[in-house]
Image 1 (cartoon, rainbow, N blue to C red):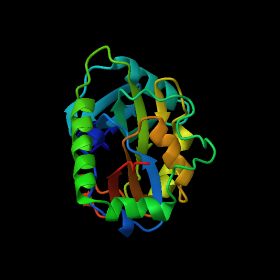
Image 2 (cartoon, rainbow, N blue to C red):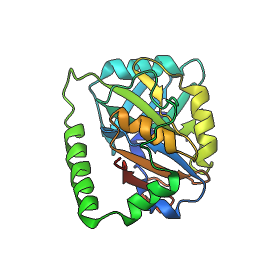
Image 3 (tube, rainbow, N blue to C red):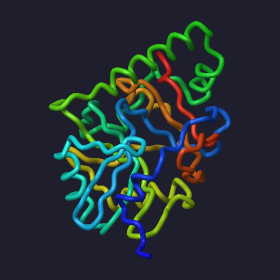
Length: 232
């Protein structure tokens, strides 16, 4: 029996969920939370396909072609997790922008997430849900990026049991930054100035993922957490 293709693997994969708390994530990798649709994308033997929880996403052919062109020099076949997003990224997303006196320290930030007023937390959660619903309403013709955040399978080898930090390193070697397709930014604490930069660029939240975490398709991960962006 022949090995499954990248497309077959991508169709069968389900996204790992966020089920942890920020304070419980040890040695985190921190990313801005993109608005849009989380998808699984596969490239294999000249073909490329995108799936939303196993259902093909058949539009946005320009992004798929750009993904195949970008990754072909470094990989024959791969499967990634990515964001299909209207949040068109500028070339300086995630670039250190200097001190921001209004940005809380990491300790203050965690305190604002965990100890802020309940009314404020409810308001942030409501805004987060409304933004997520709006972000999923992607229409044909909208300006889009494909932001790749995780590498799950590469040239016949599953990376699901490889630590996140190593998957990120491999991802950067096979997905170069381009106009339509780019790897997502990720940083390690302290995150003080990054939070200020990301907030200024319109990001509404953050994700925390343990550097040593594995990828468990379709399961809620206690080593992954997401939270609204702290306010000034």
